Length: 398
Image 1 (spheres, one colour):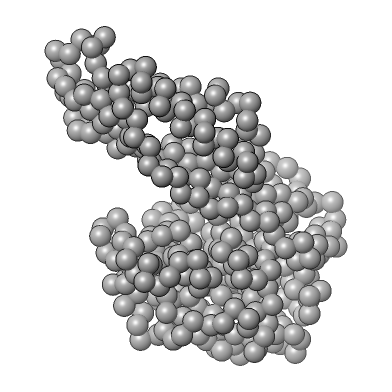
Image 2 (tube, one colour; image 1 turned 90 degrees about the horizontal axis):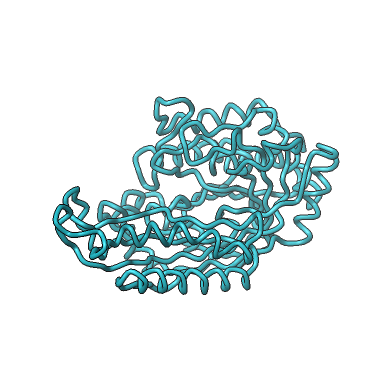
Protein backbone atom coordinates (compact mmCIF):
# COMPACT_ATOMS: atom_id res chain seq x y z
CA UNK A 1 0.00 0.00 0.00
CA UNK A 2 1.51 3.29 -1.10
CA UNK A 3 -0.06 6.47 0.26
CA UNK A 4 0.09 9.56 -1.94
CA UNK A 5 1.44 12.49 0.09
CA UNK A 6 0.57 15.14 -2.50
CA UNK A 7 -3.02 13.92 -2.80
CA UNK A 8 -3.32 13.76 0.99
CA UNK A 9 -2.12 17.36 1.44
CA UNK A 10 -4.30 18.61 -1.43
CA UNK A 11 -7.40 17.09 0.16
CA UNK A 12 -6.44 18.49 3.55
CA UNK A 13 -6.16 22.00 2.12
CA UNK A 14 -9.41 21.59 0.19
CA UNK A 15 -11.27 20.62 3.36
CA UNK A 16 -9.90 23.81 4.95
CA UNK A 17 -11.73 25.86 2.31
CA UNK A 18 -15.10 24.90 3.80
CA UNK A 19 -15.59 27.56 6.46
CA UNK A 20 -12.21 29.26 5.93
CA UNK A 21 -12.10 32.17 8.36
CA UNK A 22 -9.92 34.45 6.27
CA UNK A 23 -7.49 34.69 9.20
CA UNK A 24 -4.42 32.59 8.46
CA UNK A 25 -5.42 28.95 8.09
CA UNK A 26 -8.30 29.30 10.55
CA UNK A 27 -11.65 27.58 10.03
CA UNK A 28 -15.17 28.14 11.36
CA UNK A 29 -17.11 24.92 10.71
CA UNK A 30 -19.47 24.24 13.59
CA UNK A 31 -21.48 21.03 13.63
CA UNK A 32 -24.54 21.10 11.33
CA UNK A 33 -23.65 24.53 9.92
CA UNK A 34 -23.75 25.21 6.18
CA UNK A 35 -19.96 24.84 6.04
CA UNK A 36 -20.05 21.56 7.97
CA UNK A 37 -22.72 19.99 5.76
CA UNK A 38 -20.97 21.18 2.58
CA UNK A 39 -17.69 19.72 3.85
CA UNK A 40 -19.36 16.38 4.56
CA UNK A 41 -20.91 16.30 1.11
CA UNK A 42 -17.50 17.00 -0.45
CA UNK A 43 -15.93 14.29 1.71
CA UNK A 44 -18.67 11.89 0.60
CA UNK A 45 -17.86 12.65 -3.04
CA UNK A 46 -14.18 11.91 -2.44
CA UNK A 47 -15.12 8.66 -0.72
CA UNK A 48 -17.25 7.65 -3.70
CA UNK A 49 -14.41 8.47 -6.09
CA UNK A 50 -12.15 6.23 -3.98
CA UNK A 51 -14.53 3.30 -4.38
CA UNK A 52 -15.89 3.49 -0.82
CA UNK A 53 -19.56 3.09 0.08
CA UNK A 54 -20.91 6.32 1.61
CA UNK A 55 -23.09 6.06 4.70
CA UNK A 56 -24.47 8.76 7.00
CA UNK A 57 -25.94 7.56 10.30
CA UNK A 58 -28.82 9.37 12.09
CA UNK A 59 -26.59 11.93 13.85
CA UNK A 60 -24.62 12.74 10.69
CA UNK A 61 -21.52 10.63 11.31
CA UNK A 62 -20.13 10.08 7.81
CA UNK A 63 -18.58 6.72 6.88
CA UNK A 64 -16.71 5.64 3.77
CA UNK A 65 -16.98 1.87 3.93
CA UNK A 66 -14.21 -0.24 2.41
CA UNK A 67 -15.79 -3.66 2.92
CA UNK A 68 -18.13 -5.78 5.02
CA UNK A 69 -15.59 -5.93 7.86
CA UNK A 70 -12.67 -3.56 8.06
CA UNK A 71 -10.40 -1.44 10.20
CA UNK A 72 -11.90 2.02 10.82
CA UNK A 73 -9.65 5.10 10.58
CA UNK A 74 -10.75 8.70 11.09
CA UNK A 75 -11.66 11.54 13.45
CA UNK A 76 -14.00 14.54 13.08
CA UNK A 77 -14.36 17.46 10.67
CA UNK A 78 -16.34 20.01 12.71
CA UNK A 79 -14.43 22.81 14.46
CA UNK A 80 -14.48 25.13 17.43
CA UNK A 81 -16.09 28.58 16.94
CA UNK A 82 -12.57 29.82 16.12
CA UNK A 83 -10.94 26.61 15.00
CA UNK A 84 -7.76 25.41 13.39
CA UNK A 85 -7.49 23.61 10.06
CA UNK A 86 -6.01 20.37 11.43
CA UNK A 87 -7.93 19.52 14.61
CA UNK A 88 -9.90 16.44 13.58
CA UNK A 89 -9.61 17.17 9.86
CA UNK A 90 -6.13 15.66 9.81
CA UNK A 91 -7.41 12.30 11.05
CA UNK A 92 -10.30 12.25 8.58
CA UNK A 93 -8.14 12.99 5.53
CA UNK A 94 -5.46 10.54 6.72
CA UNK A 95 -8.18 7.89 6.98
CA UNK A 96 -9.45 8.77 3.51
CA UNK A 97 -5.99 8.51 1.98
CA UNK A 98 -5.23 5.19 3.65
CA UNK A 99 -8.61 3.71 2.69
CA UNK A 100 -8.07 4.92 -0.89
CA UNK A 101 -4.53 3.53 -1.05
CA UNK A 102 -5.74 0.18 0.33
CA UNK A 103 -8.37 0.04 -2.42
CA UNK A 104 -5.79 0.86 -5.08
CA UNK A 105 -3.44 -1.84 -3.78
CA UNK A 106 -6.19 -4.45 -3.59
CA UNK A 107 -5.34 -5.03 0.06
CA UNK A 108 -7.42 -5.62 3.15
CA UNK A 109 -10.32 -3.16 3.34
CA UNK A 110 -10.06 0.04 5.36
CA UNK A 111 -12.99 2.33 6.16
CA UNK A 112 -12.94 6.02 7.09
CA UNK A 113 -15.19 8.06 9.39
CA UNK A 114 -15.84 11.72 10.09
CA UNK A 115 -17.69 11.92 13.40
CA UNK A 116 -20.21 14.70 14.01
CA UNK A 117 -20.03 17.36 16.76
CA UNK A 118 -16.82 16.24 18.41
CA UNK A 119 -16.15 19.86 19.36
CA UNK A 120 -19.25 20.06 21.52
CA UNK A 121 -21.73 22.47 19.99
CA UNK A 122 -24.30 20.30 21.78
CA UNK A 123 -22.49 17.78 23.97
CA UNK A 124 -19.01 16.33 24.25
CA UNK A 125 -17.80 14.18 21.31
CA UNK A 126 -21.52 13.85 20.62
CA UNK A 127 -21.51 11.88 17.36
CA UNK A 128 -19.26 9.10 18.59
CA UNK A 129 -20.92 9.24 22.02
CA UNK A 130 -24.27 8.35 20.45
CA UNK A 131 -22.89 5.72 18.06
CA UNK A 132 -20.97 3.99 20.88
CA UNK A 133 -24.20 3.71 22.88
CA UNK A 134 -23.04 5.85 25.79
CA UNK A 135 -25.60 8.55 24.95
CA UNK A 136 -29.02 7.73 23.52
CA UNK A 137 -30.36 9.58 20.50
CA UNK A 138 -33.28 10.78 22.63
CA UNK A 139 -30.85 12.26 25.17
CA UNK A 140 -28.75 13.84 22.42
CA UNK A 141 -31.78 15.40 20.74
CA UNK A 142 -32.63 17.20 23.99
CA UNK A 143 -29.23 18.94 24.11
CA UNK A 144 -29.15 22.62 23.13
CA UNK A 145 -26.40 24.93 21.95
CA UNK A 146 -25.57 28.38 23.34
CA UNK A 147 -28.34 29.91 21.22
CA UNK A 148 -31.00 27.49 22.44
CA UNK A 149 -31.12 25.42 19.23
CA UNK A 150 -31.76 21.75 19.98
CA UNK A 151 -29.66 19.02 18.44
CA UNK A 152 -32.84 17.47 17.07
CA UNK A 153 -33.61 20.66 15.14
CA UNK A 154 -30.01 20.97 13.97
CA UNK A 155 -29.77 17.45 12.62
CA UNK A 156 -32.99 17.95 10.68
CA UNK A 157 -30.77 19.90 8.28
CA UNK A 158 -29.21 16.57 7.26
CA UNK A 159 -32.44 14.54 7.26
CA UNK A 160 -32.27 13.83 3.54
CA UNK A 161 -28.78 12.32 3.83
CA UNK A 162 -28.98 10.00 6.82
CA UNK A 163 -29.72 6.31 7.23
CA UNK A 164 -29.49 3.75 10.07
CA UNK A 165 -26.74 3.25 12.65
CA UNK A 166 -24.04 0.81 11.56
CA UNK A 167 -23.28 -2.23 13.77
CA UNK A 168 -20.00 -1.95 15.67
CA UNK A 169 -19.15 -5.52 14.71
CA UNK A 170 -18.55 -4.34 11.17
CA UNK A 171 -15.18 -2.92 12.32
CA UNK A 172 -12.14 -4.69 13.78
CA UNK A 173 -10.75 -1.58 15.49
CA UNK A 174 -10.35 2.20 15.31
CA UNK A 175 -7.22 4.28 14.68
CA UNK A 176 -7.17 8.08 15.04
CA UNK A 177 -4.37 10.38 13.91
CA UNK A 178 -4.42 13.83 15.49
CA UNK A 179 -2.31 16.87 16.21
CA UNK A 180 -1.01 16.80 19.76
CA UNK A 181 -2.70 20.09 20.73
CA UNK A 182 0.09 20.69 23.24
CA UNK A 183 3.80 21.59 23.34
CA UNK A 184 5.53 18.32 24.28
CA UNK A 185 6.49 17.11 20.80
CA UNK A 186 7.13 20.60 19.43
CA UNK A 187 9.59 21.36 22.24
CA UNK A 188 11.52 18.13 21.71
CA UNK A 189 13.29 16.31 18.90
CA UNK A 190 10.45 13.79 18.66
CA UNK A 191 8.10 13.98 15.70
CA UNK A 192 5.60 11.25 16.54
CA UNK A 193 3.62 10.43 19.66
CA UNK A 194 2.07 7.00 20.19
CA UNK A 195 -0.74 7.56 22.68
CA UNK A 196 -0.72 5.32 25.75
CA UNK A 197 -4.00 6.50 27.22
CA UNK A 198 -6.49 9.35 27.19
CA UNK A 199 -6.76 11.11 30.52
CA UNK A 200 -9.85 11.14 32.67
CA UNK A 201 -11.76 14.37 33.20
CA UNK A 202 -13.75 15.68 36.13
CA UNK A 203 -15.91 18.76 35.68
CA UNK A 204 -18.24 20.64 38.01
CA UNK A 205 -19.76 24.04 38.68
CA UNK A 206 -19.19 25.84 41.96
CA UNK A 207 -21.00 28.95 43.23
CA UNK A 208 -19.99 31.28 46.03
CA UNK A 209 -23.07 33.08 47.37
CA UNK A 210 -22.51 36.25 49.42
CA UNK A 211 -24.34 39.56 49.71
CA UNK A 212 -24.94 41.91 46.81
CA UNK A 213 -24.48 45.49 48.04
CA UNK A 214 -23.51 49.04 47.19
CA UNK A 215 -19.85 49.32 46.07
CA UNK A 216 -19.43 52.84 47.43
CA UNK A 217 -20.95 52.55 50.88
CA UNK A 218 -20.19 49.00 52.02
CA UNK A 219 -16.96 48.90 54.09
CA UNK A 220 -14.41 46.34 53.00
CA UNK A 221 -14.46 44.46 56.32
CA UNK A 222 -18.23 44.02 56.12
CA UNK A 223 -18.39 42.77 52.56
CA UNK A 224 -19.48 39.27 51.56
CA UNK A 225 -17.89 39.65 48.14
CA UNK A 226 -18.37 36.54 46.00
CA UNK A 227 -15.66 37.43 43.51
CA UNK A 228 -13.05 38.01 46.22
CA UNK A 229 -13.97 34.59 47.55
CA UNK A 230 -13.25 33.07 44.14
CA UNK A 231 -9.96 34.98 43.98
CA UNK A 232 -8.91 33.57 47.36
CA UNK A 233 -9.94 30.05 46.31
CA UNK A 234 -7.96 30.27 43.08
CA UNK A 235 -4.89 31.68 44.86
CA UNK A 236 -4.83 28.81 47.36
CA UNK A 237 -5.66 25.98 44.94
CA UNK A 238 -2.21 25.29 43.47
CA UNK A 239 -0.57 24.95 46.86
CA UNK A 240 -3.32 22.66 48.17
CA UNK A 241 -2.95 20.35 45.16
CA UNK A 242 0.87 20.35 45.09
CA UNK A 243 1.39 17.13 47.06
CA UNK A 244 -1.12 15.17 44.97
CA UNK A 245 -0.56 16.13 41.34
CA UNK A 246 2.12 15.19 38.79
CA UNK A 247 3.73 17.37 36.09
CA UNK A 248 1.14 16.10 33.58
CA UNK A 249 -1.90 16.82 35.80
CA UNK A 250 -3.90 19.92 34.81
CA UNK A 251 -6.75 21.89 36.35
CA UNK A 252 -8.66 24.87 34.99
CA UNK A 253 -11.21 27.50 35.98
CA UNK A 254 -12.40 28.20 32.45
CA UNK A 255 -15.73 29.98 32.78
CA UNK A 256 -16.77 32.58 35.35
CA UNK A 257 -20.17 34.28 35.72
CA UNK A 258 -20.44 37.21 38.14
CA UNK A 259 -23.81 38.50 39.37
CA UNK A 260 -25.00 41.15 38.94
CA UNK A 261 -21.87 41.99 36.94
CA UNK A 262 -22.11 45.74 37.47
CA UNK A 263 -19.25 48.13 38.23
CA UNK A 264 -20.93 49.78 41.25
CA UNK A 265 -22.23 46.62 42.92
CA UNK A 266 -20.39 44.24 45.25
CA UNK A 267 -20.86 40.84 43.56
CA UNK A 268 -23.38 38.74 45.44
CA UNK A 269 -22.82 35.53 43.52
CA UNK A 270 -20.13 34.03 41.34
CA UNK A 271 -20.47 30.74 39.49
CA UNK A 272 -17.48 29.11 37.84
CA UNK A 273 -16.43 25.92 36.11
CA UNK A 274 -13.83 23.72 37.79
CA UNK A 275 -12.19 21.03 35.67
CA UNK A 276 -9.29 18.70 36.39
CA UNK A 277 -7.62 16.01 34.26
CA UNK A 278 -5.30 13.11 34.99
CA UNK A 279 -4.71 9.54 33.83
CA UNK A 280 -5.11 8.09 37.37
CA UNK A 281 -8.60 7.59 38.81
CA UNK A 282 -7.45 7.73 42.43
CA UNK A 283 -5.62 11.02 41.84
CA UNK A 284 -8.75 12.46 40.25
CA UNK A 285 -10.73 11.43 43.32
CA UNK A 286 -8.22 12.98 45.75
CA UNK A 287 -8.18 16.22 43.75
CA UNK A 288 -11.96 16.32 43.95
CA UNK A 289 -11.85 16.03 47.72
CA UNK A 290 -9.31 18.85 47.98
CA UNK A 291 -11.32 21.12 45.69
CA UNK A 292 -14.51 20.42 47.68
CA UNK A 293 -12.84 21.07 51.03
CA UNK A 294 -11.06 24.21 49.89
CA UNK A 295 -14.21 25.72 48.38
CA UNK A 296 -16.19 25.04 51.55
CA UNK A 297 -13.46 26.40 53.83
CA UNK A 298 -12.84 29.52 51.72
CA UNK A 299 -16.52 30.42 51.70
CA UNK A 300 -16.98 29.79 55.43
CA UNK A 301 -13.98 31.96 56.35
CA UNK A 302 -15.62 34.90 54.57
CA UNK A 303 -19.20 34.32 55.68
CA UNK A 304 -20.34 33.06 52.28
CA UNK A 305 -22.06 29.87 51.17
CA UNK A 306 -20.41 27.41 48.77
CA UNK A 307 -22.78 25.56 46.44
CA UNK A 308 -21.08 22.61 44.76
CA UNK A 309 -22.97 20.93 41.92
CA UNK A 310 -22.48 17.23 41.07
CA UNK A 311 -19.16 16.21 39.56
CA UNK A 312 -19.41 15.02 35.96
CA UNK A 313 -16.73 12.64 34.80
CA UNK A 314 -15.14 10.82 31.90
CA UNK A 315 -12.92 7.93 32.90
CA UNK A 316 -9.33 7.49 31.71
CA UNK A 317 -9.13 5.29 28.61
CA UNK A 318 -6.09 3.07 27.96
CA UNK A 319 -5.26 2.39 24.33
CA UNK A 320 -5.29 -1.19 23.03
CA UNK A 321 -1.89 -2.80 23.65
CA UNK A 322 -1.67 -4.57 20.28
CA UNK A 323 -2.64 -1.52 18.24
CA UNK A 324 -0.21 0.60 20.28
CA UNK A 325 2.56 -1.89 19.51
CA UNK A 326 1.81 -1.72 15.77
CA UNK A 327 1.98 2.05 15.82
CA UNK A 328 5.19 1.99 17.86
CA UNK A 329 6.82 -0.48 15.47
CA UNK A 330 5.84 1.62 12.47
CA UNK A 331 7.08 4.79 14.20
CA UNK A 332 10.47 3.23 14.89
CA UNK A 333 10.74 1.98 11.32
CA UNK A 334 9.70 5.32 9.79
CA UNK A 335 11.20 7.79 12.29
CA UNK A 336 13.79 5.83 14.30
CA UNK A 337 14.52 7.44 17.66
CA UNK A 338 12.14 10.34 16.96
CA UNK A 339 8.98 9.13 18.64
CA UNK A 340 7.67 8.64 22.17
CA UNK A 341 4.85 7.00 24.07
CA UNK A 342 2.68 9.68 25.69
CA UNK A 343 -0.76 10.28 27.21
CA UNK A 344 -3.38 12.48 25.61
CA UNK A 345 -4.51 15.36 27.79
CA UNK A 346 -7.33 16.17 25.37
CA UNK A 347 -10.53 14.20 24.85
CA UNK A 348 -11.03 12.47 21.49
CA UNK A 349 -13.57 10.28 19.70
CA UNK A 350 -11.28 7.33 20.46
CA UNK A 351 -12.44 7.64 24.09
CA UNK A 352 -15.94 6.60 23.10
CA UNK A 353 -14.83 4.02 20.55
CA UNK A 354 -12.82 2.18 23.22
CA UNK A 355 -16.10 0.97 24.72
CA UNK A 356 -17.02 -0.97 21.58
CA UNK A 357 -13.76 -1.89 19.82
CA UNK A 358 -9.95 -1.79 20.20
CA UNK A 359 -8.55 1.73 19.66
CA UNK A 360 -5.23 3.51 19.36
CA UNK A 361 -4.06 7.04 18.54
CA UNK A 362 -1.10 8.73 16.89
CA UNK A 363 0.05 12.33 17.44
CA UNK A 364 2.08 14.74 15.32
CA UNK A 365 3.50 18.03 16.70
CA UNK A 366 1.50 21.23 17.09
CA UNK A 367 3.65 24.27 16.30
CA UNK A 368 3.97 26.29 19.50
CA UNK A 369 1.59 23.86 21.19
CA UNK A 370 -1.30 25.89 19.73
CA UNK A 371 -4.75 24.44 18.98
CA UNK A 372 -8.38 25.57 19.11
CA UNK A 373 -7.19 28.80 17.49
CA UNK A 374 -6.89 30.25 13.99
CA UNK A 375 -3.08 29.97 14.09
CA UNK A 376 -3.06 26.23 14.80
CA UNK A 377 -0.53 24.59 12.47
CA UNK A 378 1.88 21.69 11.89
CA UNK A 379 4.80 21.43 9.49
CA UNK A 380 3.64 19.59 6.37
CA UNK A 381 6.63 17.25 6.58
CA UNK A 382 5.34 16.12 9.99
CA UNK A 383 1.83 15.66 8.61
CA UNK A 384 3.18 13.38 5.89
CA UNK A 385 5.40 11.51 8.36
CA UNK A 386 2.38 10.84 10.56
CA UNK A 387 0.46 9.55 7.55
CA UNK A 388 3.31 7.18 6.70
CA UNK A 389 3.53 5.87 10.27
CA UNK A 390 -0.24 5.32 10.39
CA UNK A 391 -0.20 3.61 7.01
CA UNK A 392 2.61 1.31 8.14
CA UNK A 393 0.60 0.21 11.17
CA UNK A 394 -2.52 -0.35 9.06
CA UNK A 395 -0.56 -2.46 6.62
CA UNK A 396 0.90 -4.53 9.47
CA UNK A 397 -2.64 -5.24 10.69
CA UNK A 398 -3.81 -6.48 7.28
